Amino acid sequence: METNKIKVKLEAPMVQARYQYAIDVMLTRLRMIDADLTEKNERPLIRNLCSRIKTAESIVKKLERKEREVTFETAVNTLNDIAGVRVVCYFADDIYQIADAVRRQKDFTIVKEKNYIRKPKKSGYQSLHLIVEVPVTYLDKTTAVRVEIQIRSVAMDYWAELDSQMCYKKDAGKLEAVEKATREYADVIAGVDQKMQELRKKIQKM
Image (cartoon, rainbow, N blue to C red):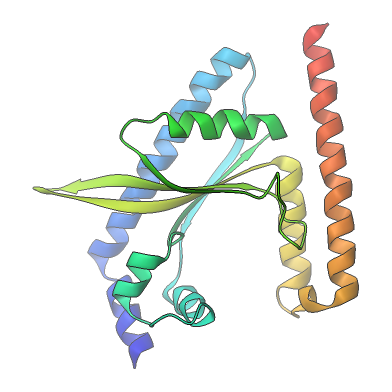
């Protein structure tokens, strides 16, 4: 019953519109950031941008997993990733330039940062996460809507996508041998990422 109630409220047109507005603002700002950094670096930094609004089913599962009350209010007030944007850039050092530019946006508020590059997850997952509050104004009311930004390199995205495909459906990620292998491959890919970055810097000095 509670699941049906939260689904109805989360899928209400105005709620969806509010989250989509925040995502659209973030995507537009990231495109402007990329244009600015492209000019400064004399090369593009962002390869791809994508976004999503978390489904009601996924939100309910996350609340249950975290042992929180399954209500619309709890979801909106405690979950930071209902609206999400993923930024895939070419090199690992591009990530920090993009993140710094997001931090400098005067109308955004950085709520939280998680650096899974300096300290990868147990699985080997790497990415920089920023939780950003975006002001959404309609009529005379402004609401701060949280958007999670995941910033990662092409190599990090390659690993994350394949890991998700291999481990998601059959819950293979819980098998010790699979966990060990994915961590090892994450290290290999991170090494290639670093070498490509070093090669780029050498080429730039020529």
